[in-house]
Length: 220
Image 1 (cartoon, rainbow, N blue to C red):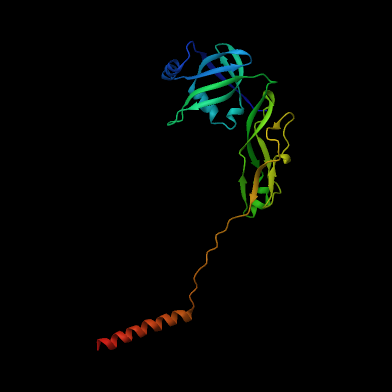
Image 2: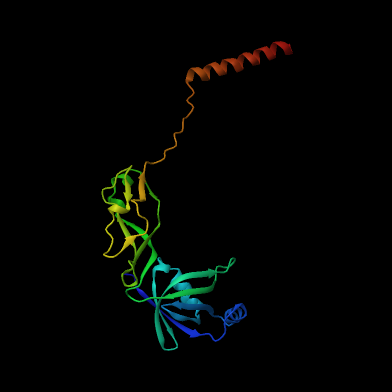
């Protein structure tokens, strides 16, 4: 299960583009909490907290406990708008959830025991097809990651989702046995060296000598 991250937030009385710009000028990130058959709640959060959380793997699969002036709500971030130039958070949308809420989330894929893979040890390359896998699960059972064990993997092996043991209640949203990664053969560039035999060298030397002799006769 993914860890829960705590945020402190402040309520916003005004909404709209002008109010959002004013919030950003005051050094805060405008956001909204919605869902669970309740009215949307405009809030603002500290940009440092949001940046730190965003740098962690699985940001959109992380549960947040947002304390809005004493009222704590459990949420998932469903959308995060970033500045197109400096990549600063501009606005965030948070969905209210309970431990039993069913939803689709993208879970990061991690690989372990690469040194135990004969294919990789012999020069093979781990070709990652999917860095994340979308699954359906309850909010209280979101896994931190999907772990792929590379022990014993040979060159030419493909790793499919059917080979991965997922936690109870976690199911891929794609209804087929898709590929997550393969062990590809090493790509070797063959470089041919030009080998000049001694005989060729002697022949070239003789040709050069003959050319010099002809030049000498013409000069005389």
